[in-house]
Image 1 (tube, rainbow, N blue to C red):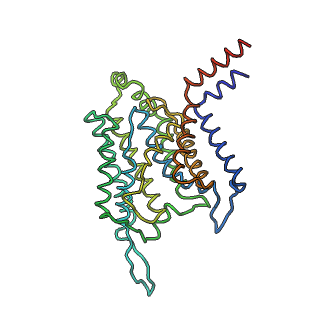
Image 2 (cartoon, helix red, strand yellow):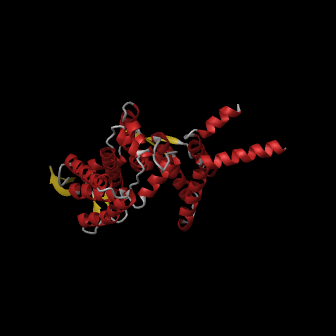
Image 3 (tube, helix red, strand yellow):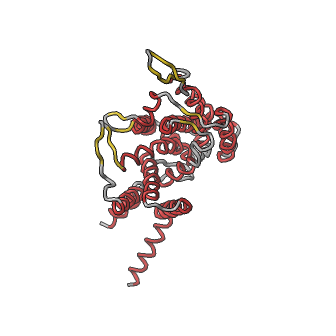
Length: 348
């Protein structure tokens, strides 16, 4: 029994799941209707649905960040990439008022599929730039991505001319506000990206290659793995996930704000990866754990706002909870507590 319990608590998903359950129970205590879900006009509504929907952009970025961190890297420019991609799609779609058959309607400045492809292409270019600096020039990942983090906001402001660009084209709103079979479209997007990643990392050797590069890049090169090419494309993929998240965010708020879009989102993504059990030192990574980590952050944010915690201290509360979860997940701390418990029991 003790061995089973020990193995269970050592699972990388155990403590994140426990934390998420405790947060949900805390929400239920203060809001008895937390788990209530109702169907209105064919759409599911409720606190849980709202948390899942709002966590979608973070889950997407965190999945890309997971692969980057698994290779011993970091990408602190994903927030700026969100701002750039959002600015591009909003500027291209916009919405011009025209009269068609005697009815006023808004039409896209350019075809919406072309605008979406352009936004994702720009996001990909951001990732290729980061990958080139890290894998090609050999720069430290945090320094290489810091460049885009700082410059990216300026690029986004140039695209929007320092203004908030509003989108009026209604079909674009379906990405961030639409529902299919009652479930938000954003969750389908997350599911597709997750399925592709799981297929590539679990059914092919790609996952092993990423972990190998993260554990020992030198040995990986001697084993025939093109470590630089792998790192290069991992950063590119991370930026693409940020671009997809930008489409959801821009569609949801129906505008692009170069100053605030994706602000500090990179920190939440890194926290989600860490909460999910992936080591920031590289190596083994857990995509499902990352999604749970993102849900922990969003559920905690929901709890803080619903409880009316003053804005000036909500970040402190959030940091304390995340700090506690990370401590619990530490193997060194768990071993120390186990040894202390064993000695105490032996003395008794």
